[in-house]
Image 1 (cartoon, rainbow, N blue to C red):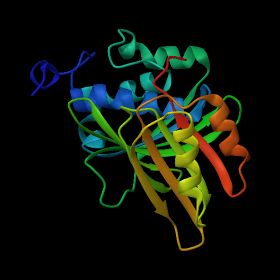
Image 2 (cartoon, rainbow, N blue to C red):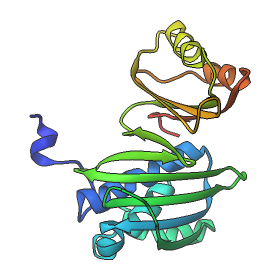
Image 3 (cartoon, one colour):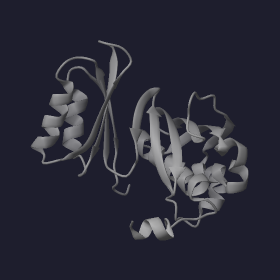
Image 4 (tube, one colour):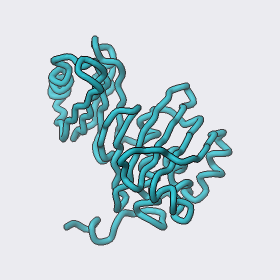
Length: 221
């Protein structure tokens, strides 16, 4: 047990799961998108939907999409700040199968035209799990620099990516492989102990068989 287990996270409340966790989901989504959010369709599920109003889940998610962290004093003002920035926001009900009760489906469009769809879960104590990215399984926590590589399901891609990281002295904390079907679309999710340099990301993006690359960095924007 550590001090976090006893006193909990530093956050703006009222709830570590419905408020702080929601902020973090929004924040991770914004970082993955890689640009400011112009439009956000926020679809709530389970307890997020049922009790989210009382716990501030909606303004917490918007705060995260604005780039706020869970201890930011402006979290309760996120709707006003989003309006001033011209961010278009809509809320609705998510239709998810076998999802965690504190879940949200985010469909985002960035100011530069990028699009992203994620399913985020707030699993308690401000901890989260990003369970899906653009329809495919992902399952990462946002606690580590995370590389998400969409590729063709062919032999050798996982070895190529891990070798490239090893060449930069980057240790892989966890590696998950998912695919839609044999020989079809696949995704690698690599949580790393160190930040992945930009030149590695560019090399990956230019590699044959790599469809696109997303990266979640712990570094400040």
